[in-house]
Image (cartoon, rainbow, N blue to C red; front, side):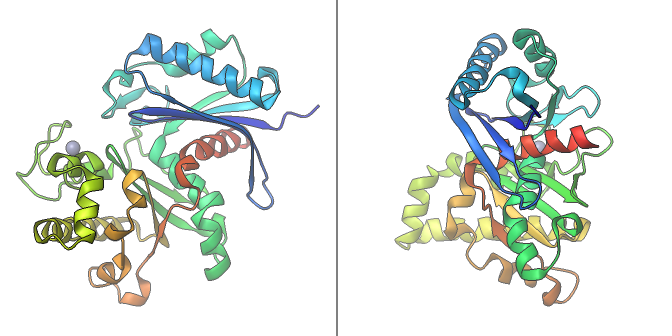
Length: 313
Ligand SMILES: [Zn+2]
């Protein structure tokens, strides 16, 4: 029997989500057989035990065996060394320097290919392959292979991914598109990376929560609270400047947003109109702006799509 199943895992700062699915390479649809989310324990040994249990649970629910998997794809929240896939940096500190692929291979006792990639890169790949990219392809007549795409994740941190000709750009050392560490305000907020004024310290959910719980903040904004509205105006100015810098570097067909904050429509209303005033070319060349089409699962679907691409490259 030909193997057709992929297992994807998306490791976040607070949770790990996994799924087993079949990828349809013709219409770019994804048929999910099993899916589960667990909390992310911030210590390598317990983390690994939980991850192995999660994988076995997913196989049991999907009623398949480890040998039936074509490959396993992992999404990790940081910069990965392109050769070893070990995390070199990231705000989920316990994973930095931890060889997760080797550990999993040993614990699972399997020869099934295991690949890993930065989670924001995978988010971008998934959205281009089977999410926002399908919409763009239909309305603008630009197929996936010809699209130039930047993905931005606004969650615990701020991540970015770039996909062109259907491939992820990782850079020489895996840190391409670490857009969260573009300095927006020289001498501004301190960042864990050692710089001051990084975009992550202004635009992430963590940054907002330092001012106020983000849910409360959005409620107050909807009620017209003037302090909160000023905060939102400042946030939007930072966000537009941030996108304008990235647009000047990568000139994408579209931006696609993911992460917890991307569900907060008020932060993104008419964002394209604001961006149009801040791009080098005239406004008809302004990139489209999409909120993710695959929801919370973009990252783990991206891990499967990446695993599939690596097998066929
Ligand atoms: Zn930083």
